[in-house]
Image (tube, rainbow, N blue to C red; front, side):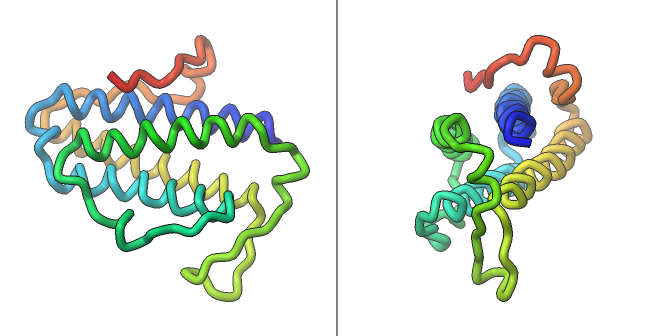
Length: 159
């Protein structure tokens, strides 16, 4: 399972970077506050579950502040991508059964595997929303299909 999760995490970062690049290339979308808020929500959730997985405190109030620009949001993605990449490359299969808890869902305990799946599925769903919003605004959403990514496994392009 760990090999698949690693692959899905790498795809997630490729897809996130591709989406951010497409939004930046479309003037109307790059200035769309609601789209920026949704993009921030994706990375906020990712950073929350990632921090929880690492056993690190999460500065919710600070992290919840939506940056004033798309570049500010993109910086959070780049930073988190690097940290998550380093971490996912070091964990072992046995680490996936370790448990985490959050006060946001009292009385619930999740495995690290489930936390990773939450990050992956949550970001996937919201990327689809962002792509639809980009298309409605006249922009062109990038190809983010996992099956197409598998062919060459491109790395994230943060330019």
